[in-house]
Amino acid sequence: MQTLSANAGSWSGTLPIGFAYQWRRCDSSGGGCADINGASGQSYMVGSADVGLTIRVTVTGSNAAGSSGSSSAPTSVVTAADPVVGAAGDIACDPADSNYNGGLGTVSACHTRAVSDLLLQSHLTGVLGLGDEQYECAGLSAFASSYDPTWGRLKSITYPAPGNHEYQTSGGTNCDAAGNAAGYYTYFGAAAGDPSKGYYSFDLGTWHLIALNASCAKVGGCAAGSPEEVWLKNDLAAHTNRCTLAFWHNPRYSSGGVGNDSTYSPFWQDLYNANAELVLVAHDHEYERFSPQNASSGLDTARGIREFVVGTGG
Image (cartoon, rainbow, N blue to C red; front, side):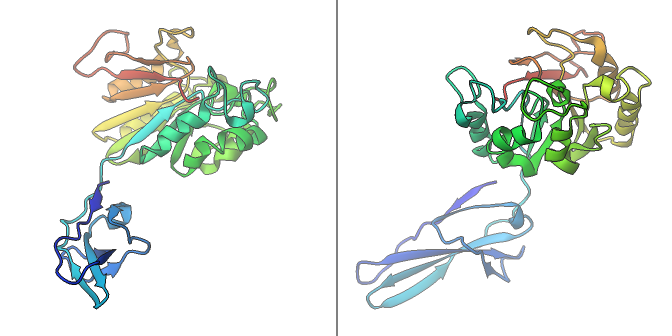
């Protein structure tokens, strides 16, 4: 959204003259104005509450003789901005990790707070968690100590996908011994979808976004005809948005240590058939961007899907 700035302009009178500002929210014709609570600085950042309305600012000049006010012309009608999304996986260190360092991290590891600070400065519409949100095993107390004070500051706009560490049963703080990712599903609640599935979809702006569960053994497999693959195919058929993005944890393609994984070829085929644009993944702790590819790993500049590996969450 845009930031508006006020200029006091030229005033006549005995100096010194002090100026005060009050931003006002008005109807689409510039009338019916009301003061915006707390908006009394020289600048004002337009927000979602202003969509469909206009904005004015009143400037009051004061000196020893008294005060006088002047109001600006209204802005044009405020329209909604395009949504801006941040995404990464492999995020928060286990509090027991020697690099955790009280949440500050070290020179070479556990930069969760620094990454989340960048997200907070970006005025995002949404945040996509690409799995392994909390190491080593997504324990609820680990989430409270490590993820929540950092990336958790954006929890209200976060759409998570589970990673393999969410289902890990040992080796970290407060692990779920049953391997059901209890800490992950408890922390994110309804935002993480049905705990027996972990996959769901939603719209953001004009885009359709799909969160998938790459821990195939936990949800009946990822092969063609599996419950998740059938759901994906049906979801794509039901949502014919012009633009589609899918995200999950393990990459279909990667030049890193994890490498390519054909386990997720059925997902890719369904997305390709539906003319999807983007796939975001993590797991490899790196950043990589691929050229658009078809389901046979071939370059396809006409309708191929571009994959980003973003295992850089902290």
